[in-house]
Length: 100
Image 1 (cartoon, rainbow, N blue to C red):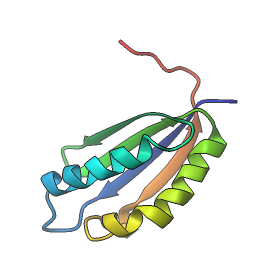
Image 2 (cartoon, rainbow, N blue to C red; image 1 turned 180 degrees about the horizontal axis):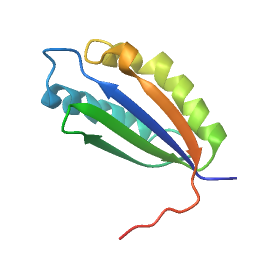
Image 3 (cartoon, rainbow, N blue to C red; image 1 turned 180 degrees about the vertical axis):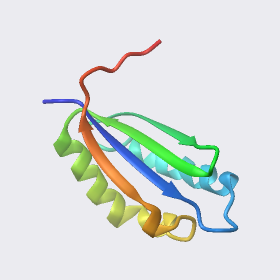
Image 4 (cartoon, one colour; image 1 turned 90 degrees about the vertical axis):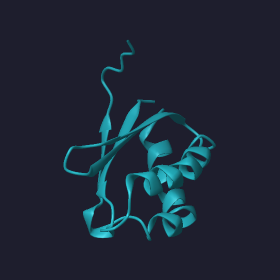
């Protein structure tokens, strides 16, 4: 078993606000914490309004399974807020995770 990081980059639709996206993420956070293999998640916004979501999982299989469930269960809520064409997803094997 190997820790896996899922990195998602996306942009909001024109006219949608950070506050709206953060509000939607309250439900996403509730959902993600119930997923098998979930460790932790961070959500950040760049100066040019790109959102970066990093999710940490206990295995690649857990990350892929959660991504599939997210598409089926949660994307309907996200679609009115995000530019689907802006979504870029990558996964990587974590070699070091350190907390301060």
